[in-house]
Image (cartoon, rainbow, N blue to C red; front, top):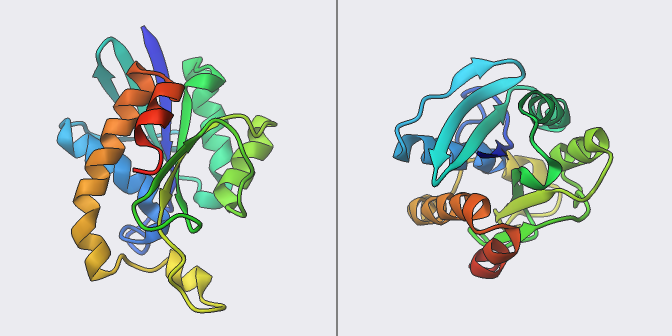
Length: 188
């Protein structure tokens, strides 16, 4: 049976629950709710397992805070014997318009501290990442407030459809492969 580690990046605690920076957690929560899965608090994060079409998806929400996500990623990859090509990191991206999806097999951290730590711990920039656009609609010097801010009313209305698309992407990643999934979802 093929196993995949799907890691949604975010920060733990109610203070961050509805923020743009926590889209990784939000996407995994939406999948878990749709499939009636329950997360359990385990070492370095909350985990649940989703079985679909002969695949096992281990969904991980690291409890290490965003900037230290690499430790949880490496721990669970090792423990579950997940090959690097079956890892998918879900993160927010300021450089994409709200709700836009970009799946990549490698790249820079783009200034994202969670990705920076993952790259450092994995010792490579060649890992799959699913970037969810949160746009850059903030004034100069207000980036932190924006990223750690709640979704706007308009974004909140559009979010359910974007979450559904994100769930489809995760399933496709495990069943159709990274290249087919990129062709199907990038820019959508």
